[in-house]
Image (tube, helix red, strand yellow):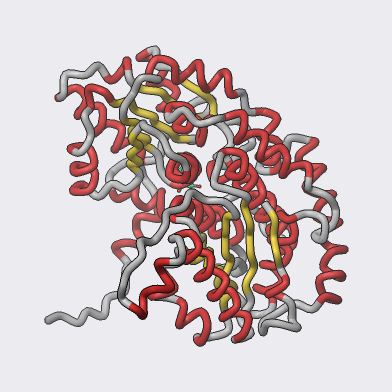
Length: 431
Ligand SMILES: O=P(O)(O)OC[C@H]1O[C@H](O)[C@H](O)[C@@H](O)[C@@H]1O
């Protein structure tokens, strides 16, 4: 990926970061980079994620999915980091295999998603690093039952990706299911480039080697300076802008196929950096659609936002048919791709003209290689930002709190967190 931070400079935007401040920040980037390299070399928890391009074995993933390679539909059961990486890849790329991601446990939605799939020709991809996440295990039990009701042997159609031990690992062993490992030291939200994200990609027939090569190429750019490394340029600039008041980061891809990438980014940024009263709030937006809903706020609302555009140089195009309506004639001379590009450039310029900081993240195209680079680059940006904030990027204690409270409420053990539910302060206003 390439990154253009020109519209985040103080000469353009407020809040903005001056060239001199960036040069001073670059000294911190050099120190952070040494820490990151050390963490990678010592295979430390979290930092190990940045070694994934060299660790992930596409042959092992393809071998595991071989029994279901003929699947016409793939149901991925997982949540958060065990779903969004795979969804980012498969939603971005074309495939004849239908993909369904069951993360939420909204009963009506789960039922309707299951009803929409022909289970005879489907496969199940169940993913949970811990093997204990209530939503994933509950949905897996529901999906298994649906397969049984349809007369399909789910044990012949299921691939498990989980940690070294835990209930899901035990279940895989008991039923002899093909299983893959969530690599040690890699938190879920940093695991897209492992089996966690790649099983679905493999079943869909995507080029795993190209995903890995794109990530490996991005890894080569990690040097001690934000001026030489797009990932660090992004991480350092967003950090600097947050320090200056841009506490919101609206990620706005100009490609429908990258909408899920903004969702994936939101988890990465929020769970990694949101701690010790620090962090920047990620917001999901989509160009051009959200020009017509959120742009007013971004250009004229409080100066607490950064807009991160994600663009692609190449895309399949479609011409706009000519019309004899005079005012619409200009459209007939263009393509939908040209319209999208013009809207992006106009929106970017409109923010800059209003002094609103924005950053451009550029991909050559939406393909495996570029996606590998985007996933890796944003992870590296996040790790760098975590170093600059001084937070523990790789933990998520606040999420664990609610997980324990939920289990306590359902009788899954004694958890004092569950008591907080009964202690809720009420001030009800009823109709
Ligand atoms: O992979 P699992 O153990 O099922 O975890 C799935 C998700 O659970 C929690 O919500 C964590 O905060 C996420 O980081 C994680 O991705």
